[in-house]
Amino acid sequence: MSAPITPDHIDPVIHERVRLSIVSTLAMVQEMSFNNIKQTLSLTDGNLSTHARKLENSGYIKIEKSFRGRRPYTAMRLTRKGRMAYQKYLMLLKEIIEQSREAT
Image (cartoon, rainbow, N blue to C red; front, side, top):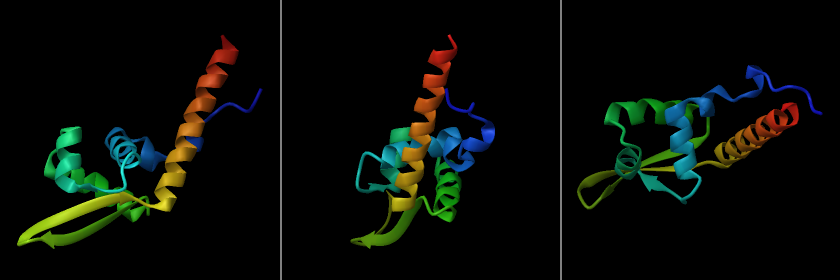
């Protein structure tokens, strides 16, 4: 049996519900527009912006702003660091489930 999981093992950047939703969504695609993420996750502009900034500051996502025609376009994608952090997070959840099964 492995050592018990403590809160210190859990990445607080990814563990927050909205940020986990963003990272999980971006893990399934190469990139996604700000508006598509906002609609997919039913978030407000401000809520998505705040959480995306935290993920970007942590190096987990890359935000690129450009224009499509004359319209501003913001794209987000998971970075290598973000993908690795997400995989680590998923492995930790699997370990928690396994420990839970062993305890019962």
